[in-house]
Amino acid sequence: MALTEQQELLRTTAREFARRELEPRAAEIDEAEEFPVDNFRGLAELGLCGLSIDESVGGAGGGYVDLAVVIEEIAAACGSTSTVYVTHVSLGTAAIARHGNKEQAARFVPALASGEKIAGFALTEPGTGSDALAMETTAELDGDDYVLNGTKTFITNGTHADTFVVFANTDRSAGYRGINALVVERGAAGFSTNHLTGKMGMKGSATAELVFENCRVPVANRLGDEGRGYSVALSTLTTSRVSIAAQCVGLARGAYEAALEYARQRRTFGKAIGEHQAVAFMLADMATEIDAARLMTHRAGEIVDGGGDPVAESAMAKLYASEVLHRVATNAVQIHGGAGYFKPSKVERIYRDAKVTEIYEGTSEIQRLIISRSILGDLE
Ligand SMILES: Cc1cc2nc3c(=O)[nH]c(=O)nc-3n(C[C@H](O)[C@H](O)[C@H](O)COP(=O)(O)OP(=O)(O)OC[C@H]3O[C@@H](n4cnc5c(N)ncnc54)[C@H](O)[C@@H]3O)c2cc1C
Image 1: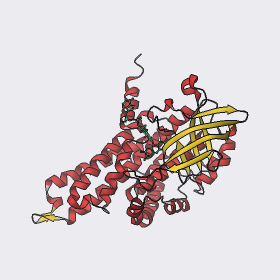
Image 2: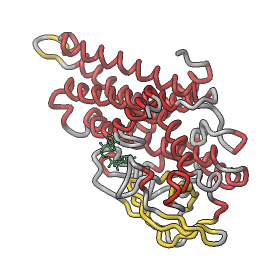
Image 3: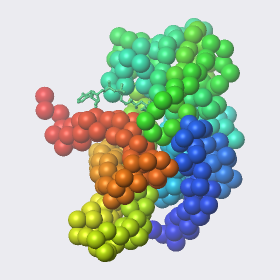
Image 4: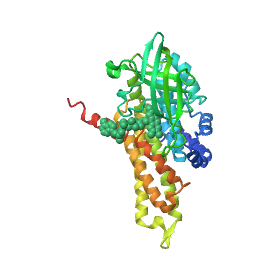
């Protein structure tokens, strides 16, 4: 799939920024578990924090293929920054821009799309992740407000985001129709966050627990009609999986390029290790699989851009790209030998950053469930 001239330009801009600003600090951000706020501000200055968000609601315009192109470049340089960016753009901001009414879009989107504010998306709870319908956070209607009670966990950007889309149950007996999506702003009374440290990778992405204790959220902050929250969650995740797939392609490319360079310089038995067929074939497989993952990602993005709903295609792209990343990261460490096992080796970092892509926005098992359901249809 060829990129347009405009997409090539976007790629060059993102690549130059990523190599100049993101790459040099990636190891330090990982080591210090530091939220990359300067990187986020830099992306905002480039006008990228509202990419793929409709201009009519205050976004920067562009589509999901554009977004995939940019995410690949960010992820190839700094995994943590890519997680922060994906969550901000294609989860938090996209959910409000696509599912909010005009008044909500005008109130929240411009500050998010400009990068003045940061977005988060809170679905997972301590008791449930894959089985989101089992959520225990409640949003009880009281006059013009919902009263929110419960705890969300593993929330990316949690300690730094200003605006969260939070999912809660208003009517348990109504199943998926009992769930609402509410926009909650930092500073709301009864809302607090706790930083979760000790992650394996993506250490700069500030994962947090969100705690709601009788937190009043105006009904005017509900996205969509009463009981539409579950469909907001599913549809936002469908499109955002294109972004995670692009993140995997970028991380895999970062590991592959490092391995390629190493294979050219490192010599054993009188020749560059790249001249040993075992190493050369690992590189050949990496290049092939990354290419295939990118094609699947862009295909899913094109469906979104054409107004379609790529439920299976985005799940396939995310599943495949995350598993390609897993293989590429493992073999990139292998090609580096012992040097790949120590910090601050880039491949060591990518190896750790990679794992979560098989877990968040739906585990690989859940992607297989989505894909198999779309193949088999309703068997009952
Ligand atoms: C670093 C990080 C950042 C995250 N960021 C966010 C965020 O910003 N917002 C947010 O809402 N969530 C976030 N998450 C949460 C993430 O989406 C969940 O961890 C994920 O959906 C899995 O849920 P779980 O951890 O509860 O695992 P579980 O659902 O308990 O699953 C445990 C295991 O069982 C398997 N399993 C479960 N059900 C089935 C089934 N039906 N068939 C087959 N296998 C099954 C799973 O695949 C998995 O292997 C983040 C997680 C991490 C680690």
